[in-house]
Image 1: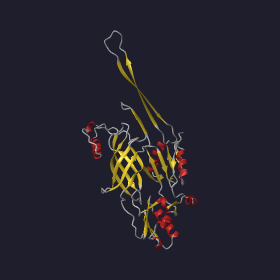
Image 2: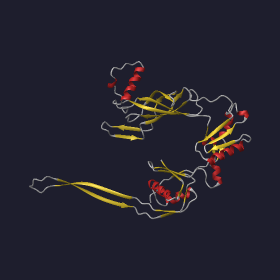
Image 3: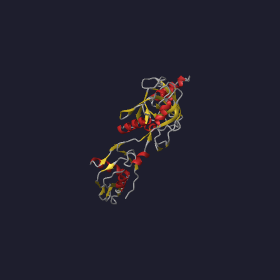
Amino acid sequence: MKSFVLIFVFLFGCACSTVQEALAARIKDIANFSTGQTEQLVGYGLITGLNRTGDNRRNPYTVRTIYNLLRNNGIKVEDIQRFRGDDTAAVMVTATVPPYARAGSRFDVVVSAMGDARSLVGGTLIMTPLSSPDGKLHAIAQGPLSVGGFGAFGALGAAVVQNHLTAGRIPNGAILKNPPSETSSGPLVEVGLALQTPDFTTALRMASVINESIPGYPAKALDAGYVRVQIPDKYQNDPAYFMAALENLDVRPDAPAKVVIDERTGTVVMGGNVTLSPVAVSHGNLTVTVQQEVAVVQPPPFTQAGPVVVPQEQLQVQEQQRKVAVVDGSATIQDVVRGLNALGASPRDLIAILQAIKQVGALHADLEIL
């Protein structure tokens, strides 16, 4: 039997109460204060310093961008079309301004190639303005790019590539100039908590914990993703102390039963609430091998005929012999893993098995395929 590695995560909601207490999380780890807003920024720029892995000179927008950059720096170019631009690449720069960011704050940016650049390894982003969807300038990005891979390219098209080379990140590569929204300096009467994973049970538990810890200042779950909390009078002009105490309260989150499958990597992640009804499973692989050889038949001597090329094919079919296995109804993820392990399935086999079990209604979980 083939062995397989099944990655599984115990999510919140196991049957044992002692385990539930151990799985309590701080509010700051499962929710965000709604008073701090994020903002998406985007910009267009140039990566320079590439080792002849940049855009082809036939890309008109890359050549035009280089021309404009040189002209803005006082360099007069007579014939920009003769410029060898394969050390440069046009890129899109995206970033998310974190909550409560002020002028001068730094944050990461993501850089992605726009043209036919083969690799951005070793490149440096030239100063690039970043704007919000309304066109307002908010930040400036610049710096060396971190790709996390490597590539070697031959003159005739041969290549060795490790990881994805046309996108990367610049840690702390952007400086905020104009914050998208300033935090109000007036009294703050109430604060909202937005759950990172909306869930009615978790929202109600969070409101209950806050009401028990801070009596007299009610917290109310408005829906599955938002809890409203009233700030005590003495903290309304200085809410930071109250918010710091609030975010460190422990809440036991809940989550629906879910199985996440990534078919590209063969990864399967199962939540702790996943259960199975009794089901019989049989799974086997069918392998078809076709081999083709070319034989040259020589003509008889003293004839005018030439050699004849005769293709020869060999077809081989092999089917794995697997027995039917019965997976009993299970109440915990350990039982699910133990039952599927008995089938001797590989990760690729496991994906097909879980999809089939879901179709017959024996898998009591949401099956999400990435």
